[in-house]
Length: 242
Image (tube, rainbow, N blue to C red; front, side):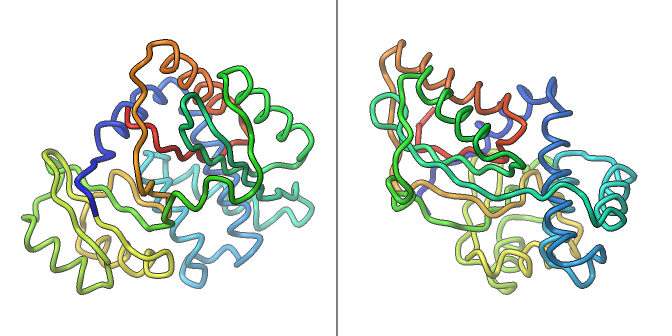
């Protein structure tokens, strides 16, 4: 894995999103609802729900909020059906962007996503137009300041649990897994009390694109901000080297 750390970007993103905690909790709440509907309300028998709970905790969602979300999803058989839709496209200077959504109205979502791309000088492409530039991986990011275990010990723990790769950056440890091995690796680290700043299956760019033009940077931020404000948008992946 190349030594390109997402940690600084994540810290920046989390700080920016502190003012929009409600948005994060809405996103995770929908993921909880989908996970419960697919596999039931018991995390012990539902690995997808366990992964969403880990993501919720990494985002400081209170336990009672998580429990309420699970109970609500389990008790409401007629709850809204969310459809998973993914959009792919390009931002300024050919930056590749993937947008994951969960929606109860795909016409609204499609229009909003298209509008975000257009307002930032980008365009939505066809399925598969940019996803080939990314690798689907489990990614666990650990803040060095929060972790008592040293790098070598943590690396051996992760690799023994099935991780594919381990990277030590200036201020973080990063563990990468295949999508199917993510739950087992995350749970192995969790059992050892390793605090995780980020733990999710994500899309890792194979190459990165730089934006040196100030106008292009503004346009790219416009796309990301508009997508970030959309409640239907669950995750945005891109290969902009910020």
